[in-house]
Image (cartoon, rainbow over all chains, first blue to last red):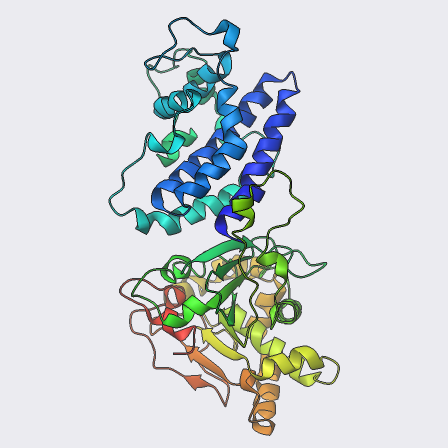
Length: 188
Length: 289
């Protein structure tokens, strides 16, 4: 199979299904875990489109099939839309705030995508030798399809107390101690 | 042209090989399959480090890589005996050559919601004309045993035995004559207490015992040499061997009809099969150059 097919079948589809299952649960942790996992898979797609592993056209097609609804669902319902929602500000929901809290480095990307902007136009890394990163990205993609979605156990960083405190906005035990196990910090 | 990764844990029916994967070329003219067998305590990824990326890097590889699919097999090199891994190897050859399963190349159409543009990306199934088996360390002992089994039972195992007739064997630092740790490893092991502890643990491994005691290996040497003498056309009975000058692990030596390449300076047991920018020999050796 093509790398993108393998990624969709073994990465994106299981993550989308996990998210769908979690939506019917009352367990907030499961919901957060599922949306985090789903967003992580989007970041891989975003990166793949940037370094050229996937063509932009195909990445957009995967985005519109799987991710578009997810990002739209982060917006509040139309009747509750904030009067001040505009190009400079989005109205947050609990889900969108949590996602932005989990991935603080991707706030702009999340907000622009929630607004319906082109997801692949924002927060690009602008690598100089993007092509040379393709083998490394292929490893990430392979491991994401292999390990991320096969276990129902929470990921390591989800069990990290420092991460949890940070995510909930609680003060750190030792003044400003940063969690080093969060996905965003590990890879970007 | 690029290679696409596919997990092949379930390549052989009723046999799970977790961690095995394939790199499938998108070149529709692909006509060669290359199977990689790791060594003792190795794995399908680490043992063959850099092959995965360097085959797709411009200017550093032999052009054959473009027309080859690579299959990296993973098995329990510690727990399983050489003979049982050899039978896995034979099954893998049987399932992959010359026509590999279509599911490796095509997406399952029953999966709902996948856009047509993604569906259309499926690779064209390949049909192989040539097969190359590449091994490192214990993997070489495994392949030697596999070829011996296939040739010895060529009437019962006619299909796989015929396939191996034209198969090339390229062995990195082969342990087909056993282990014989020297240098620092050997010196540490010669301290009696360390040796006792190490040997006690290692003796839990059937493959290690076989390679240490060498009885089964010597029988394979004897048989293979005899078969090669009797049947000069059977390619898999004659291997190409590459070993590093700094290798302190395996017994140096080859079978009577093997081709031994000059020792690689500055390469040890582990580095011999890992191509780097400054050391591209493994990329050439693996495809028979």
